Image (cartoon, rainbow, N blue to C red; front, top):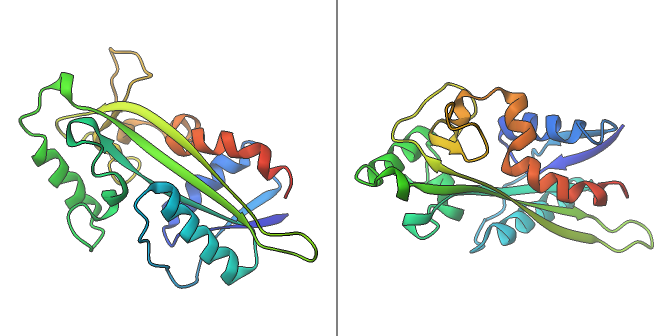
Length: 203
């Protein structure tokens, strides 16, 4: 089985990526990254994803995937965006991030609570022999809106307040109320990975 390293120390992301990858490439094993974290000083999801993938590929010698993702709220001009993980400070406190965002939107009516999860995935294949290093970036967007209160115990991050557009209006479940399989089939990461899958065929 061929290994590909995912440039994250977040075990939830490793599990989620393994499930997504297994649907089309069961011969690939996604392994977590145990090296030093690079400074993510990019100003876009794509820049940060490449920074992480390059670091993981250089440290391990393996093909590396890196996801930089976040929630983009229209009424906030696309924020938190690349600052989603640090919205309430550098402690990366997911509950604090979620509660701060809810508080900032507390007076915003439903028609103006549109948002989208965005995932940018970078693939970096290190140079081997005569072959040059290869880099590619894809993006997945999952449109929806933000609920006024967290619902459900599933998922992580902002999942409990994100209500995807593509579901029956009568249900309107937050992603925190979805099963892992439902999320892995429809999420922003799944959408980005589908765009990346043809490139993985070369691994």
